Image 1 (cartoon, rainbow, N blue to C red):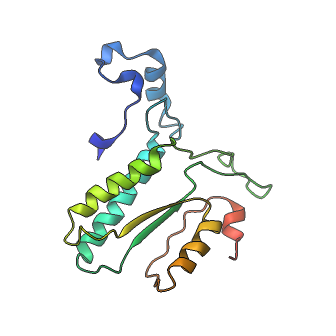
Image 2 (tube, rainbow, N blue to C red):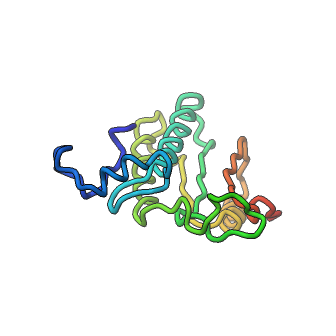
Length: 167
């Protein structure tokens, strides 16, 4: 998976001795700030999220390769936290945290589609990416797909308002 990590544009085609200072500084501090990314590159957080999506798809392909009805649907704003309330007391709760590059959702779809093409039912799209606030997109998704049966729901919601939502 590390060979799929997106290096920042400022280092493409360069030998390590030629890397610019801002890249070297970013490398030293990326563990303390995994959301940081240089222009044209990918943060460690975005890379981790992309890897987890691919792993979930691979597990489904392994355990239920011939079930066309089991889908993985990922919901994300891709713009980071939309806002925080007074009930969000951690230092990491800041608007925009976890934002990714504008083209990232399409890239994620391409990666997941490539994984799906290798599955026995590769001609059937079973992994979907839905952009937007889950409080708005999940109800529409369920209305548009009333036949949906949820076998597993995993919500990684870091802020109070989405967690308190009763949809």
